[in-house]
Structure formats: structure tokens, C-alpha cells
Length: 195
Image 1 (cartoon, rainbow, N blue to C red):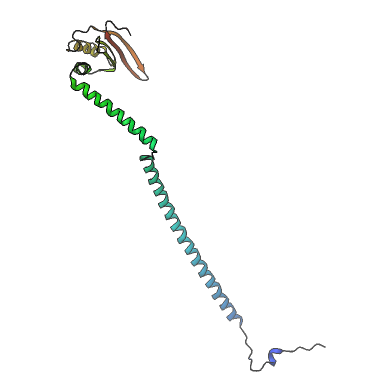
Image 2 (cartoon, helix red, strand yellow; image 1 turned 135 degrees about the horizontal axis):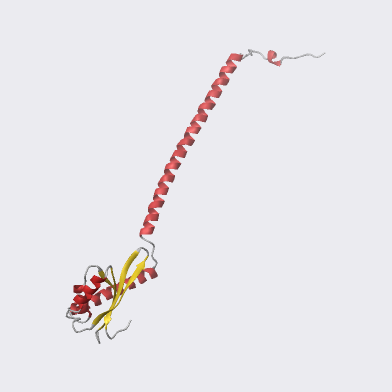
């Protein structure tokens, strides 16, 4: 036969400790409550991090947009591009300087250009001017809305001092169309020139 030995009962001064079912349930509920509270704190911390991340991403996007705007506004130049830009600006400055000198002289092209400007009439405009100073040969091409302004322009032009001794004639006056726009194209030249 088996004999059971209760060692707990043999220890001197030990009282039996018993936990009731109600205490166990209350303890378990407190444990679960603390787990839920800790999980909520973790969710709250994660939410704060995601909000901060969204704010940082928005700021980053704004800064990228500002950088792209600045790059588009001020493209990066290497030294060759800068030198080419300087040469182009110098050429433009030289051309403007020559034009100012030419107009300041009061003869040659400047007198012809002044008289062309004086003879201008509304409704007709020049698209090409070719003037030879040696033989005073002239070619003028332009456009007009109606034929009348072209004839007025030619009549005023031959009365100007630079053109008074130049035999100018209207060589061509034709209809021209570009898309929905209709206009007249004209060609005036000295009698010695051919188109």
C-alpha cells in the first residue's frame, strides 16, 4: 500500500495559505487592466510618432518644392555656360553700341530709318528692310490689313528727304493667309531691283 507524506505539514511554523477563487479573479482582472492600459499607452505613443512623421514629411515636401523652384529660377551654371553668357551679352552690347553710333551720326542708315518711321501708317507694318548705302537700293517687305495703308505708306515715303530721289514702286501686293488670319503681303523696291 502506498503511503502519502505531506512534507508541508512537517515543516515547523508554516501556516497554510489558501487563495480563494474570488481573489484570483480580482487579481487576474487587475493584471488584464494593466495590460490594456499599457497597450493603450503604446498605441498613443505610436500615434504621436506617426503624426510627427506626417508633419516632417509635409515640411520636407514643402522644402523640396522650394528647392525645385529655386533651381528652376536659378539654374546651376558651369564656367563654360557663364563664359558663353558673358560673350553673348558682350555681343548684344556691341550691337547696341553700333546702333547708337549709327543713329547719332545723322546720315546713312539712320536718316533712312528715321524717314521710314515718319512715313509709317496705321494698318501696315514692315517685316524686312534691306538698304544699300552705295547705290541707295531699297527693298521693303511688309504686311497690311487693307491695300489703302500700303499706298499711303508709299506716297508718304517718296516725300521723305532720304527717299525723294529714289524711284520706289510697289512690286507686289497679294493676299496671304495663316490659319484664321487673312492679310496682305506687299513688296516695295527701287525700280532697278528685282524680287
